[in-house]
Amino acid sequence: MNDTTGKDPVLELYRMAVRNMLAGDKPGAVPNASFKHASIIVEELARSAKLRFCAFCGKMRQDVWTPQVIDQLRGAIGRGVDVRIILTEKPEVEPPDFLKGCIRTLDTAEIGDRRQQLGKVGHFAVVDGKSLRLEQNPETREALFAANMPQIAGELEGIFDIIRDMSEAA
Image (cartoon, rainbow, N blue to C red; front, side, top):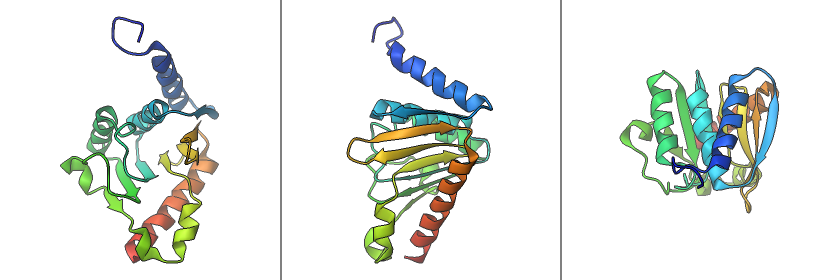
């Protein structure tokens, strides 16, 4: 942190790049390889959501699902955005009451053979069927942020719906 605001200027530049990509119409992608990047991306996805925000993740890690992310989700819900989150483990962050109805925990033991299919799916977040963060390496948490790429985002929304259906059937 090198400025008087207490914010890391490099991370703030990253935030502005993500925000500008989401606000524009041109497709674009940038890699991210840190929890700080993940948190910025999820926060900005929630900030930009107009219709739908969906996320599939493990346990809502506190270093990604920060108070700023939670505040943006509150704002999204206040704007009428359909927010849905599917977890595979008990959350590390205690979700506030306004968010509890949006979260479903998928008991992977109850889905039987379909568990193997699920294990191949990286954690992801998608907004409005056009922008996303897709984890590509669960060990390093490396991921891809893509803005204005409806084909990829639409495929991930379809996967999210399948996972949601699996969790309802379990």
